[in-house]
Length: 177
Image (tube, rainbow, N blue to C red; front, side, top):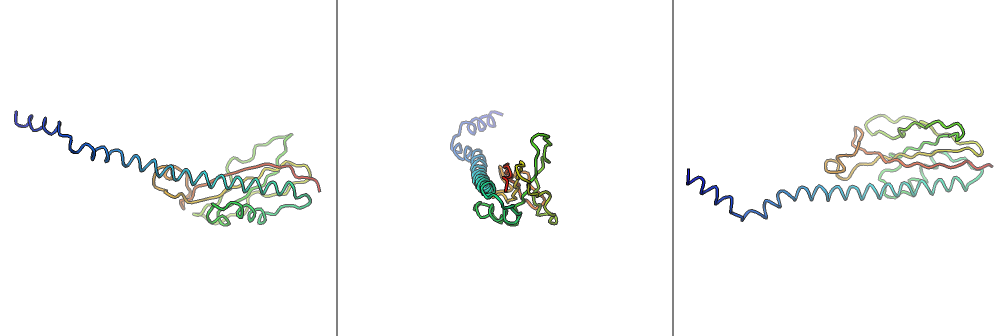
């Protein structure tokens, strides 16, 4: 019994593997945070570019009196201005909803997004407003996370094909002709 206790105490006091043990414990945690921060950086960059592209496009709509914007034209403008979104033309959906500020009805809270795992469905709601009407424009784009199985990429809500959604919205008043 004394021999086993002596060996255990010698093992307990031995500090040769201390740095290795710290590395084994801390390395996965540091990699987790590093991959999550890279994922968050790309999400932030893409969302910022989407917001800016939508703002510039809505500004064009407000300043372009006399022209009714069409779905394909708006989609092209947004995709051209949002350079960081891969496959923007296939993965972007636009909704334009007429809203009455005097008789407020909350628009559907779920955005109209593409789903790569299902068949393509037609545009849910896209209507050009009349003069002086408040219009809500909502854009949803799907993208693949960079690290889908690690950290933040794993925590994102994804569709059946592994795409996550990013939504941006804006409002404007339809100017008179």
